[in-house]
Length: 123
Image (cartoon, rainbow, N blue to C red):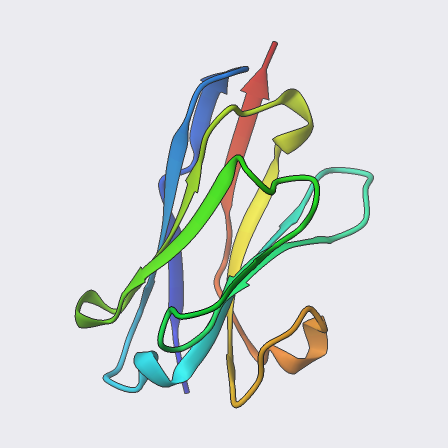
């Protein structure tokens, strides 16, 4: 199995930037699609985006497209979520999740999840 740990969350003013990291255990990390998913209090879970195993393909939700960038460094077993132009609506707990042999936005296809990291954006 894959174990995932998110980090990099914190507080930032609107318009600022923040980079989240998702570090995975094991040498099979490079085989997995990694997704970023967020959930704000009282709101539905939102699929932020994903990056395929090779990093060749990325997907972003319309709400973050142009502001967020997902990248990965398989040598470090790490996926990043670079967030710029942050808005108060980006406030949420952010999770990374891993799936083998899948790329898409269907949450149940991602069996491995991290514990999350909190992002708070103030106006």
